[in-house]
Amino acid sequence: MSPITWYQFVAALLLGLGLFGLVSRRTLVGMLISVELTLNGAGLSIAAAAQLTDMDAVLGQLGTLFVMGLAAAEATLVLAILVIVSRRFKNTQTDSVSELRG
Amino acid sequence: MSMELVGKIAFWFYTLVIVSGGALAVTSPSLVRAMMGLIATLFGVAGMYLLLNAPLLAFMQLLIYVGAVSVLIFFAIMFTRASAEGDESAEGGLWVQARSVLAFALPAGVLGLTAFLAAPASIPVPVEVAADKLGQGLLGPYTLAFELISIVLLAAMAGAVLLAFEKRGRK
Image (cartoon, rainbow over all chains, first blue to last red):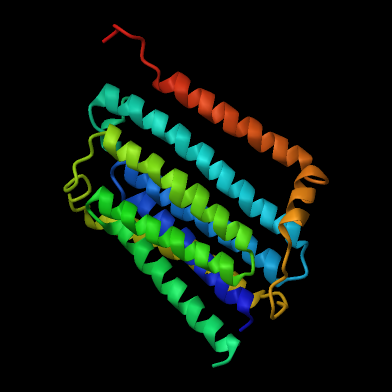
């Protein structure tokens, strides 16, 4: 198997672990940690595809950097949302944030 | 020992770090321990970037993720007064576990199979890109994306401050 396949396996594994956590976690902080795992998998996949094929390597590395920037922005916003949720509901269990449930 | 063998050993070592850290991050009942697992995974991915001959990416991974994002998540744990034990300790039912395993296996399996069946011809030695080439890319063909990501970061920061701001005296 070519090297890029192994890197893509690791990236898919990171995505799968992140989705696993996203479904199984019951607090918002745990879900945030899982999303970070998923985004890391995306970055690794883009970087591997750029570095190990004939693709423009500059584009790939910059794409990975943009994924990191988006992850930072997302983490900031989720922190703010967590502060609000914990202020209003006194905890961050996902089950307690269900006022709109019918 | 040939360099190729060293590279393979390093790859499997980083994979081990990533998998064990990730497993700890998504299964540990204590959120602080899950955070430690996430940090181990981030270090492993940084090592992968080094193996891919992208030292700038590895450095940024350490700087942004290990340095900034993990501190943010620690703040999140602190602000929400998550207890060190027990937030995640309640056992989910069989259905929760089944759908979690499904959420892991389905996308990872499909993507892994695709990567296996439709593997592109890969070059044996990763391309090396100097940091100044990346800078020229940011200021040349990819200026729009660069400016947009700064706007996104600014909006996220301003929005976070606006959301979490509490007027003095109001309870």
